[in-house]
Image (cartoon, rainbow, N blue to C red; front, side, top):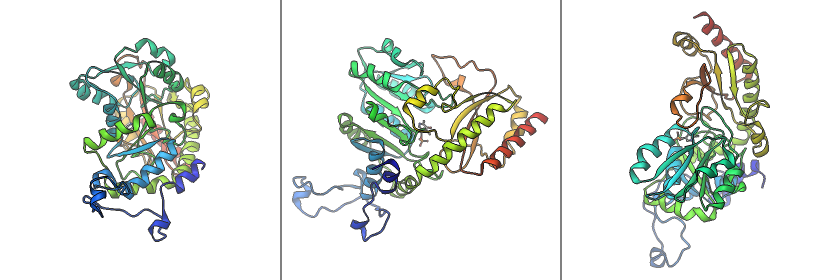
Length: 385
Ligand SMILES: *Cc1c(COP(=O)(O)O)cnc(C)c1O
């Protein structure tokens, strides 16, 4: 099946469900065993044994995401961050060393430094553009190399196959945060990555109304991640799972629109006198473009740009009165968003020495000309403030 058919059909079983197109929403804690044999686990014909272990509602989303990412098994988490932390915890023990890109989603860094550090797992950060040079940072106790491409806020691409080669040579597990590509524009498991995690909160849910995480594993890593998730009590609520699987059905069409309008808007911003630099790997002059072109088949609606330095009152004049661009966290919904960022504040081993005001923009599904008019008016207010 091609991706768009996976998105529309995978994980659904209308024939087992009175012909109803969508999976039913099972609210369950107790699930009754029909026989003592099934209760004792000798008869394994029962797939659901307890609410926390999953219901057909949960399996529906798991199966669809697993097929999309080309994995062996997918586990659901109650948020994207929970997916990231469970995957890392499943692959580390006290004394281990983990390599994390300096451009990583900031809460992932905080989890490593504030939580896993207390359990004796040390995080070392690396230049996201390091490629095969990462071998110099590998230690005997390195158990995980984490990746995220493109990076949060700064959008550097990573040479995933080169890093995977080094990891395989040293028997290190690779985990990637694949939220930006939504499992649709990039297939890390096909390139040898062991685990792909996503904040399904973003494009899978797609409507800014639900928190959800997905962890897709290859055969070698699935059991340990499943055990970690189960023993830490992790599960996702049935109504949220239902909304995520509903969002997934239209994700391909939405992403194509985000792709087209995102690139158009990035090109428009490049021409603006207020803008010093646009960080979008699909732009031919972006430093990560060659890697993006080699490994990805598209771009979502999220990217960054740097404006000339502005005073806060000027920024406020722009931001406080936007018509379509909302100011808020998360992204991947149908609506456009714009926030100021401060990349230098969340880095430790590489320098973000770009002068000016960094911004993160999510290009939603609104009419393109309306979005341009909104930004133009915003830049005008900024200039006059
Ligand atoms: C949003 C995000 C997360 C966390 O997802 P939540 O559902 O908000 O917990 C993780 N990684 C990346 C790259 C994200 O953008």
